[in-house]
Amino acid sequence: MKQLNANFVISAEKLSQCPDFPLPEFPLLGRSNVGKSSFINALANNKKIAKTSNTPGKTRLINFFNFSEKFIVADLPGYGYAKVSKEAQARWQKYLEEYLLNREQIKSLIQFIDARHQIQKNDLQMREWVKTYNLPIFTIVTKIDYIPRSKVQKVISEVKKEFGGDVLPFSSTDRFYCEKTIDYLLNLCN
Image 1 (cartoon, rainbow, N blue to C red):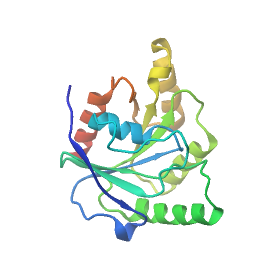
Image 2: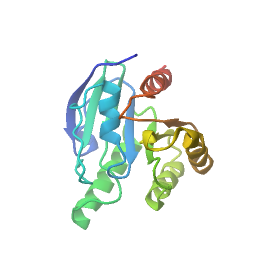
Image 3: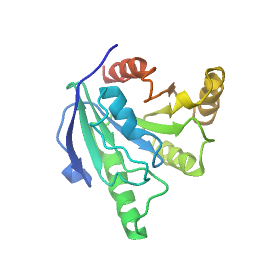
Image 4: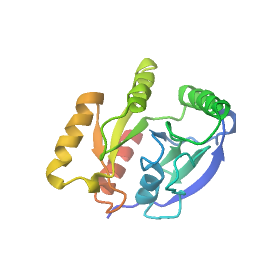
C-alpha cells in the first residue's frame, strides 16, 4: 500500500506564525470530532502523529504536518461545539479567516463530513463562506466504515448533490481509501 512519511512541523495561532514552506498546503475544515486528526494519522499510517480525542474542541491551533516533502496538511480547530468562551471563538474565527484567505500555499481546502449523520447547518454555513470567496475545495466523507457497504454510494451521492465538486469516501479505521486519497492529493499538487 502506498504510504507517505509524515511529521508534525509546528502549531500556529495565526497567519503571521505559520511556517514558510514552498509546498502545497491542504487545510482541513470540519466540525469537532469529524475525524480530521484520525485522517492525518491514517494517511501517515501512524496513530500518534496527530492527537485525537473524544472531547470536541481539543484542537485550538493550526497544526502543520509535512507529508514526505510532497505537501502540507494543516489541521484546523473544528467548527461547532467547543467549551471555550465567545471571545475565544471570535478570535479563532478572525485568525482562521485571515489564514484561509491570505495563505498563498493553500492548494485546496478539504471539508470533512461525518458519513453517519446528515449534513449539519454549520457544514452548510462553512461551505457558503468558502463559495463566497471562491476558494478551491473538495469533500471527504469520514467514518465510512460505519455505513453498510450497500449504502456508501448513496451517502456519497447525497453529499455530492449538496456540495458539488469531488467527494471522496474515507475510513481511518480500516485505511481502505487511503491510497486513493493520497493519489488525489498528489495529483492536485502537480
